[in-house]
Image 1 (cartoon, rainbow, N blue to C red):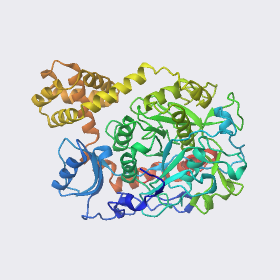
Image 2 (image 1 turned 120 degrees about the vertical axis):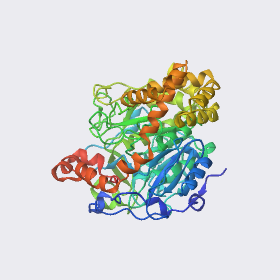
Image 3 (image 1 turned 45 degrees about the vertical axis):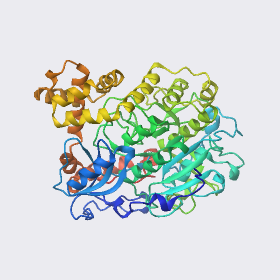
Image 4 (image 1 turned 180 degrees about the horizontal axis):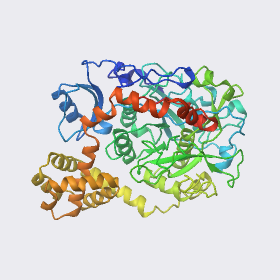
Length: 576
């Protein structure tokens, strides 16, 4: 298909009025200068009192039927995550085979930077030639606040897709910055601020409006558009992060991104800007399959010895024990494109660099840079799978004292020169090969898995045992290993709970018993009633989140102090 056109009209199917119906408070932009009213009541939904959720299970069609049978309303079909966005009455309860995830907000993982720190030397640090023209023939979906039609991106934006109903452009200023790091020509700077993949194409998938508002459902609608056009898109740059009450295994955002990965789209995500403490990686950067990137600060030089992990960069291990980030890339004090008149442009004029550029810091920037290098790699070697790309990137990093794993650097700093030099001869590691085999095996058994899981969750031991035996040996092997990655506390609970139900003793296959317990754990974490009461409840959100994030000196110390503020505040503030 021809993507070189505006697709705003077709992307708005399903309406947009419902997308901001989030239980809790309305997100606010720091630049607006006003604090959100934590006591604001959630607006009434299309059916009166209720809650907005994402329901996932065996298929989008089946999820729609379940929602309607419960008296709810389907707001958008989301095959990308095998489910739907829906509005459910407060009293509605779906069957145990359905995961009901609460609507939640998201924020960008980058900020304006008005510091006097020296500008980044990204291309030099990565080992790219000053006047290279990398990335030809590769298309990157930038899922963000929109991309402005600025001169440095002329001829690079092949489509504008608006999921907000506010039209094309970037009224916030973040998405344009990300697109510039990837594909800017450097025309307005004599090549000084040239992107890392200046010959790549950009698809602008706008999921946030000029006030910076976005949420889980809107992001999933953007990913659904990408899924519908996956044959034309090779890379996703998603510089957004969100909190989630769910394990990565069942979170709808993670599930959608993993599905695109398994279809051959390389997905690059940030670890978030809540560092430097351990366990500060946010979804979807917590997913072990995706390429999760932290941010490094180059110190204004192209040499590697002085590189350090940014104090703001999220660090693992995650709450489920996953080591993250996978690697780090330039994200501190980087210079990219300005979106004139946007919220961040007018809010932080001191961060402007000349008339066309802007300075910013955060893992958003590191994500965009890495996505651009993925484009360069695929331009040279188009047949590389996402698993092999990730393995290649992690296996060719450079080392520096400030980029150790203990310091939050993952495998080390992204080395584009080594990546491109070794792309044609790279021998995929056993881990990457196993990931690819898992995707093939599980994908081929998708319907059998759905039937097995539904029987497990319904407590039908006899049916589950029969369906387990119908799975391929590769699928069973994957199940055993997937169980091992579950959070230890959830695993212990699941073992006890499932053992009490006696099905564990009915099967002679350990992997079947383990997978059953894992499914029960996921079900418990994602229970609709718990989600509605403990996560989406506006009163809880107002009290708990306000106490944590907005209260007096504690919030001021964490969010407004110097560099820490710089990595947090050019963002949508969390709402609960």
